[in-house]
Picture 1 (cartoon, helix red, strand yellow):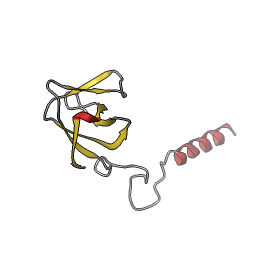
Picture 2: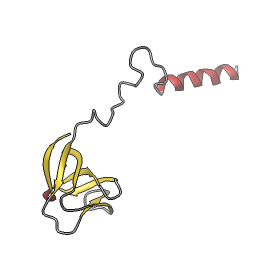
Picture 3: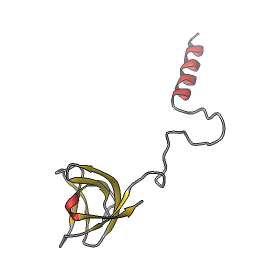
Picture 4: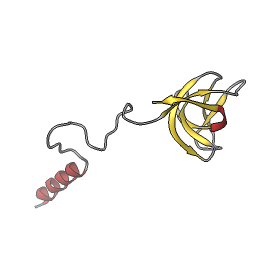
Length: 106
């Protein structure tokens, strides 16, 4: 009896976790690759030394961008902030929109 309950629990967990692929594409329908995600490309402008990339708007500093650097991130604004990728360490975070010039879509 206990073995049947354990086996039923394992089967339910495998089905709920998307472990069963029926046919066709091997990746789950909810999986999105980096190339599939829409985004924007930016160039850093109006900066003399560096632009801080923050964990949250007005949060702690997690990375830096330098004048003329190019980066990418979300096209969506969060107030006056945009979510981008830093170039010094490569962490994601937020930068003030005034210092980012949109140069295209990703």
